[in-house]
Length: 57
Image 1 (cartoon, rainbow, N blue to C red):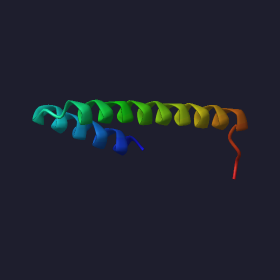
Image 2 (image 1 turned 60 degrees about the vertical axis):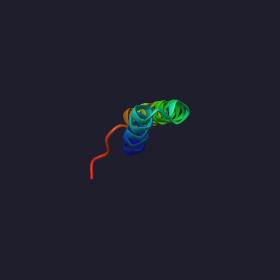
Image 3 (image 1 turned 90 degrees about the vertical axis):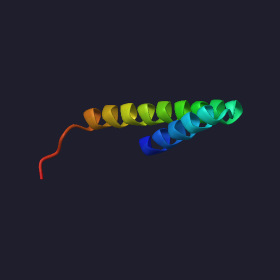
């Protein structure tokens, strides 16, 4: 999921350099949204992992 963030950031940088401000702004917003979703999913996964505890196999 974080690879999508990097992809959108690269698209935003290239679009910004070439002067496409609208595309650059949209790409940055998409990258921020995906980044915060990834952080949220990580935190939920960490809390659930801690709540379940470790099981011995």
